[in-house]
Image (cartoon, rainbow, N blue to C red; front, side, top):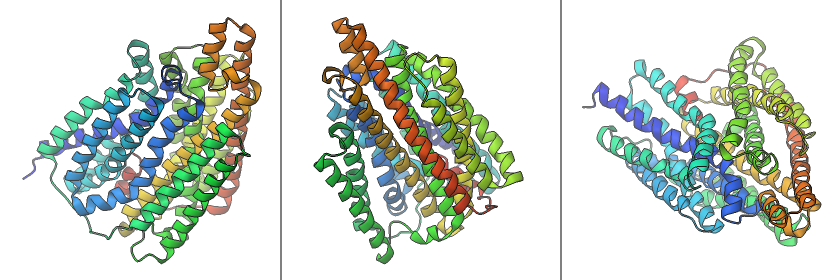
Length: 494
């Protein structure tokens, strides 16, 4: 019989596990300039360091939930933590960009199992009277990863070597495995048949589409191989949708998209994730390579985004009750669009005060967009559809982040390469290093201005997408959306 104390110990282990996953989403952002230097990584490599994790995470979320129901959630969670720990060690000691990309992909696989199953077992661990408190602790642990990632990563990079940002996962994994082994009971859900063709089509389509976009940034948008790969990805994803319509046991329940609140909320949360992770890709490089700040200083300079997000999220809750989620989401996306236009005016000589203003506005816009969009989508779910709906929503958000890094990073990279000589074209970090090695102040200024120009282009694309999101919010969202059940909302926030 599981005692009350044991339940809270198990919750601590689950909270630590989700904190590790959340940290890994943002901790890499401040390490990108260091990785570019130490691994001689190109901008395309830097994109894949982030995207490989997000893509595998997104592609594996849905099947991971189904496998947990069949094989047992405790067994799958412990196995996923061991995979996560082993992949963290492999990331820390990677010698080449290819090795790090492969290890990051395996890391995403472990995270894809931890995310949905850790939420599912909370309903088994806690009775209804304690569940709300338990889920609040669990969600808070996950949310802490957003501000802690850049700060902790920056401090580690300034005091140790870059692999330390991955090794911090190892003690968490050891503690988590021990606690789950001792205190988590085994549980299973309804056993559904696996949609193997759906898994293959969705994974292959996402990888081909993203790979093609990133390659286009390196080779140019007229490169035949890149365009063929992008088209192949689109075709595979189209076939996936057609297969889901006729499969006896589909991976994705397309009927969910018949609900305006779910469709609008899912699409708009994806748009916000696109903007947020795309921004976290470029800002640390701006602060480090262009501004000359160390890793911890770059992490500190990202805090206005997080602070704005927290303020926006708090305001969104009150405003949604008064105005409805449609207007709040549209307002948030409008702020993101305006902030992107302000950010596009940033040059290599722009002071941090101006940058802090527009990234704060971006954060507020994200806070006004993400929580009400998630609430709207989750409020449309029935108890029977909450599991698959949650997994689908999380997968769309992760795909949005992966595509955001790929698209905005590619736009930045293409524009940067237009403005610098070939000797400095790999990345802004390597360009700065080459200019300093040569003692060429003119080349150094050119590299920094070229990066600022590239970021300007990428911010204009992000702003345009946010503007489209405003129109979609007004067109897709109902005036009032139902509130989700607390346990459904908590499962979505990791």
